[in-house]
Length: 501
Image (cartoon, rainbow, N blue to C red; front, side, top):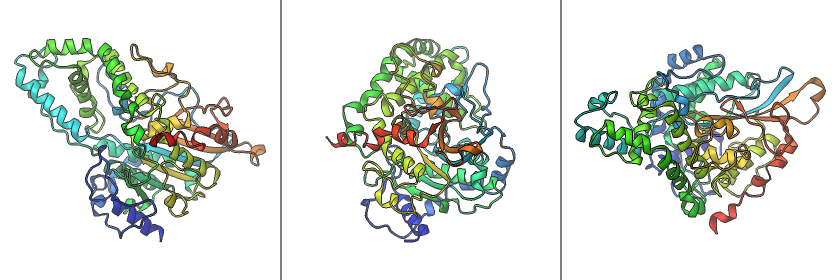
């Protein structure tokens, strides 16, 4: 089957279906080796991202793009840092103790980005919960404390699930950043692009594609045609989405994150709840309500073009926001990362695909990968120099765990918080903010090294994260062979058999 037909058939499997529990679009009942139907991607073509980012808008983003590829922070109000909003933080570059620039004597030979979608509205269930909370406060509170008066006339108008305009521009900028960093490789090849099948992820891949090609001066009137879309849902193997491991989804460890979050919430949020109830008499806010009140800050900020903090942000101190960021970090760590016994297992398939791309060898995996797609050079080429994959924060957290990026972090306590500088760079905001991204790159360094083994380096949101167990040098780089050897957890199957025990 021609590659264009394969891409179209997979888009057909995604378009027009009911929503998955994570706002993803489930696959129809296709088997991994089953056939695909003719294309019908009209719903994707109606994506609001294309309407907002067509033509001049994309060009304007390229022309105004900061030369440090995304290091500029969004606007903030007094004492408010959008870098403390956990996974709801708009994109920012995490501080790096190692220079992220390519060393002067090195030549990049490979570049890959694994990216989260851009800033979005709350999920459908959350937006209803937030609206209900605001309605309840407004219907019960008669007198508001100082600084809380704005809530009386506040109108909740957020949608659900889809990208905000800021989220769309984050990915346009990301595409420009990728082109700027790997410009030497992009002269000879286009990136091979895949996206997990929820609307906001596909839209993010489209916006990235617009930015990347616009920065090259190329026209992209039909960016969706450049993207291989992988349907989400248990009936379709997809290395960019968890959901195929029953023991992880529904087993004893599936409540681990909630348990850990509740332990910390009891300590951190109780005094906040007390203060809120004093300033919002008769609201009778619970601890859950307290967290929801804080959620209103990032979600009402990322709907603005520059993430201008909403009035809800100033209701809380900087240290309370640090506690919020830690609350969100516990959820990711124990839900999908190292803290969950099967968290890293969910990222094994992607890591094995990464190994194949780095080495040029066929994919060896029996977990979440799709053997039909991965065995075809049309749908899983091994000779490209540039790759771009798009997914969700949870799946990225599992990939980081399978790579062992934060093996030095240690268990996150639930009775006190640990800042990311004490966790070897781990926090939800430093790893999976909106539009968060991991770069994996190979390089040759020095003329004398041209015939030697390539070096590999990983950056998470422009922070160099040295790999563990492969003899990383002072710049965080490992030789390719030792790096692959260090990924024995993924290469051996990563406890996948326990998914069905």
